[in-house]
Image (cartoon, rainbow, N blue to C red; front, side, top):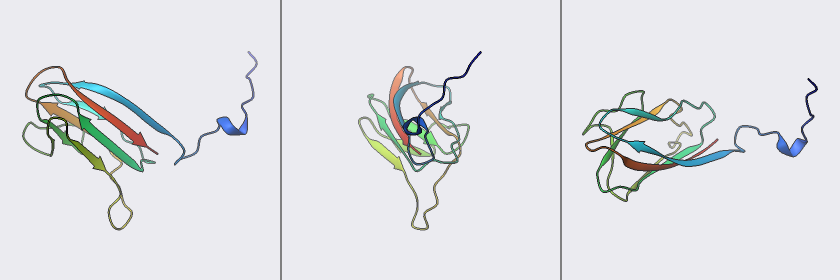
Length: 106
């Protein structure tokens, strides 16, 4: 099998990519973004009618962590020292099939 060469404009480096999408959250914790050591920013928007709790870990707990209220957003961004959380991000809510939209830049 012969591999096709790629052009320079197809090579992505850290800081040159992003992803957007949505995930269905429910009563069980779910990882919504995997760890990304190149993360520069992550935004989460609750597009449902129920509060969604976000955790900077593999496991979210109901009524703990970062609350994202209905139709609200949170941004995970660098602090004043330029450091940002790069580990997994998980979510949970008190009702089934609630949508959480996200964007992540790296």
